[in-house]
Image 1 (cartoon, one colour):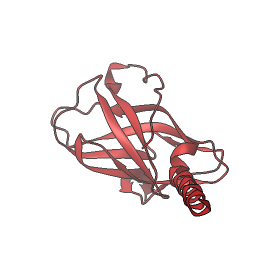
Image 2: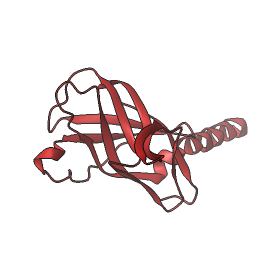
Image 3: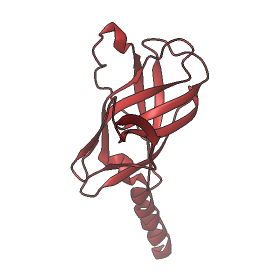
Length: 157
């Protein structure tokens, strides 16, 4: 019985460790920019808040609407703004990372089909510790002057 109790306790500790970053992260105002017809890519933007006492890193993102999903940033390369893939997005303890046009963002590349305004794109953020969180991002037509979508409650995996 004592052995079983130790095994069960170890399992709970392991599960708690696995939940990790996903449990201490909140995602606010996620949206995907509606791309022009035939555009091969678009961006997803959001505010990722870390409520925990330790920093976390987003190391990957996935979605079912594009063939590739990458973490990107805009950099100034000798006076020219260029988009570059980054290996991770750091979110400090009790801090946040703002993914916005002209800065950090999630790039959806090689769209499988055109997105439609109002469509929900599920984006799964993967963290350095192996945990993940799904975010439901609404497709928004930024050219129409629409306001960003209201925050949505997000699940974790």
